[in-house]
Image 1 (cartoon, rainbow over the protein chains, first blue to last red):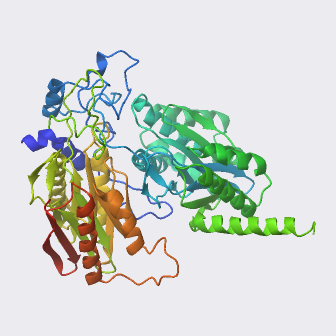
Image 2 (tube, chains in turn green, orange):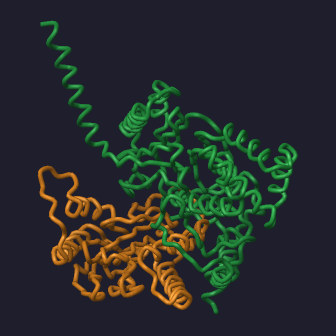
Image 3 (cartoon, rainbow over the protein chains, first blue to last red):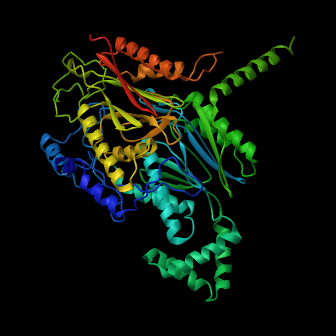
Amino acid sequence: MALQELCNFQDIFQDSITTLCSSVPFGRKTGCDYVSGLPFSNRTNLFNFFTPVAEYLDESPIQFGQISTIQSSSAISSQDSILSSLAVPTSLPLASSQSVPLPFPMSHGTTTLAFMFQGGVLAAADTRSSCSGLVACPASQKILPIHSHLVGTTSGTSADCALWKRILARELRLYQLRHGRRLSTSGAAKLLSHMLHPFKGTELCVAATLCGWDGGEVDGGAKTDLSGRRETTKSQMTDLEKTSLAETKTQSSASITGGQQCSARKRVSLSGPSLCYVCSDGTRLQGALFSVGSGSPYAYSILDQGVRWGLTVDEATSIAREAVYRATHRDAYSGNCVDVYHISSKGWIRRSREDLKEEYYREKERQERRERQDVTPPE
Amino acid sequence: MISAHGFGDPGKMKEYHYTGPVEHRFSPYAFNGGTVLAVAGEDFAIVASDTRLSEGYSIHSRDSPKCYKLTDTTVIGCSGFHGDCLTLTKIIDARLKMYKHSNNKSMTSGAIAAMLSTILYGRRFFPYYVYNIIGGLDEHGKGAVYSFDPVGSYQRDTYKAGGSASAMLQPLLDNQIGFKNMEGVQHVPLTRDKAVQLVKDVFISAAERDVYTGDALRVCVITKEGINEQTIPLRKD
């Protein structure tokens, strides 16, 4: 059928048979539930992107992936390749350039920040999503929870960030089911970075900071960890799992108590707050303080001034709010409200969204009061 | 399809003086105009669109509505490139049928929205040039509106305008339905009749100021009793 060929229909249909038929609606997310049932993915072929047959292979590497959405001067695939691509939309090599210039702009521009302190990790972001001069949405969510102890801030194209976070959440859930423990934040960052690597050079734009609490409780965590490991010895294992298991086996003695002690020791050193920055150009950094987006320089100045390890939760929240407020004041592409998430050993907590318009008026009042105070003493 | 008009930003004036030799390439996209609007109420949802199909300076059709019925409780409005709108609605219909046959129930509005997001993102590197807005009732019977960008980013709103006149209509809806940017106003919940009247007024204003919007207005009101469609004439010039 022409429609099937045109729209990769057969692939979708086959994939939906091979994957599980349970599709959870996107809106339902409790602490550990994950979005599942993406229809176009299965084990071997995670992504089934339709890409036009581009002449990128003949182009010079400098032009590869260079996209001009404005003028017609960029190289566009000719009529022949467009027609041939419409007739045969098989899954093409993933790292192909955008050869068709888009007639519409995509959303960019933001202020997000995250930092570690003694009470966990705090993440804050504005809520404006702009689209070349127009505010596409004044109430978007830029901090997306991935699982109960991991939260990701998003910056870049909102569609890319939303979809890649979904894919990451699914992969982390699968890891948890296979290995009986949660993947650490740096592990999740590595996973995301490797998933984005094939798209390096295309106009995919994702800059995320993953904020999480690793390891969880020491006592309970160690026990479940061990039982999970025992189960994985029975099930099929990949090379990675084998080497890690071999390592722990050589370190610990044959007895279970020895293994438990060893894992307990390991857990304590690895648990705690963790913060990683991942970018679609390949950057992956671990750190204690990150701010991403067009408003980040303004946020950095506030954060560098006030962030210390010994902050209380309230102090940290107010610094984060202040940083986003100052950034929204100065950066045109950030604005509207601020979202603050706090990740501790018990999981993430979300403060209710706050409209910064009120803050601006309060600031004005404070300034007027200060001016009045300055004026009266000399008299 | 071969015109270069659909190439740059819609609404921008073309340069009329000679700027040097310009290479014209085939563009797979065209801009067919049109505006779509959706409003969610307590127990109803409204999806409305104009019916003008234009391209460049010509009008192809005065009777091409942009609302498509998906299920008994969901209607989608698609504006942008008409070719992609048609294909996208065919794909969605096919996927709805597949779901119905394998799960023995219709898709809910939230599920359709999530599915559409992945369909659109599957074409991340050659996108559907369509601005979608889904309006319908959720599982609890409340009105729901989901708005999309062309590559699949979406979220649930109370009201949203999309298409060529969206930049003009969205602030008006923010003010009239969201009661934003006003001081000392009582927040009255929106009744169905008031919402329909507001939608009509809003489209009349859009037709005045946007050249791609006009001819007629198709309003679909979704309630638990079903989908009720009305057509109201707009200015034809």
